[in-house]
Length: 399
Image 1 (cartoon, one colour):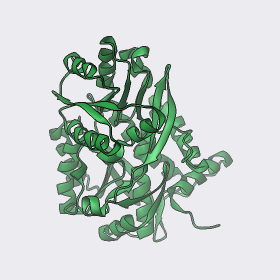
Image 2 (cartoon, one colour):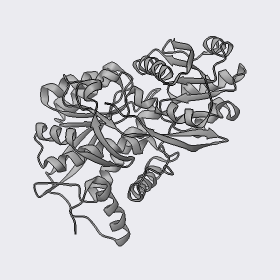
Image 3 (cartoon, rainbow, N blue to C red):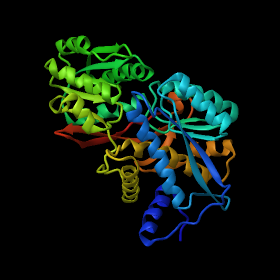
Image 4 (cartoon, rainbow, N blue to C red):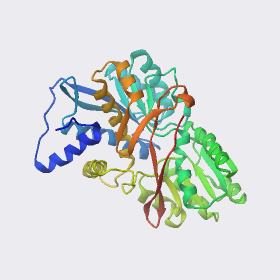
């Protein structure tokens, strides 16, 4: 039998072996790799944070049942330690310090809140902890001064890929950028304007509302008066639902796009009203996307089954995207065949990864001064009726 190639094949083997009643060999009790996961598990960003954390937890479980990874002939299993950053700088720092200083983790997967990343990256330099961060509001959370920090999800320009997909599918020439004043919002205000300039789209307004805004009527009134055809932002799902509701009440009938993944579509529609959210576009890892391989689809289905059984509905496809962070780490460890940090870094910099969402490779030397941005696909969906329907996909290259 040929040597297993990457985690997609490994997890694919698990799916087949499960049908046959096969139990994968277990690692020795002390052969455990601790993985830190830091996400907003409570608060306004929890609709994003919870599925991100769950994706890492579930994929680690599936990988462990398939036998884990092999380093120099020894089997190793993963143990995920989840911490709540509460979408707060103070809680994010406390979570990073606990994982690194107390739990002695050498790998952290998934944080995307800028304040958490900023707190963790200094500690990672000191103690050579490899961090695989998700999407952040600021593009420059990564850089040559932080060699142990990689971004496996989209950077702010990459997240505008949802607009790339939208522009291929529908016609709009005027766009308003609406965000709240957070790192995520500020980053998107810049990236959204840059995207519009690149594609010749007029930005009628670029608004940063106060971070705690619930009443968007004054901002939306101006946006509608300026005849925007698309309202674009990076706003948490529950708050963006309010934006859609209020804009619809003011007579807006154009499109919406959000760089933040679409989560809990039913609750989103319930808050905004079904008529208000028609034409809402956002990242959504739709399993019908043609870039997904048959073996990738099998493991995604297994993750979904376990997610629903453990956490209840609805299943959030964002779990698939954040599971990729663990795939990247595990493949780099197996290629390096050592836990020595510099060897693992070299493997990450040079190899191509097989992920649930297609192949990807770290790039960004010209953009960020170091190859730390994974070039990966963005998949988008649009709300039609009471469902999210697959819309398209794109890949944004980072030179």
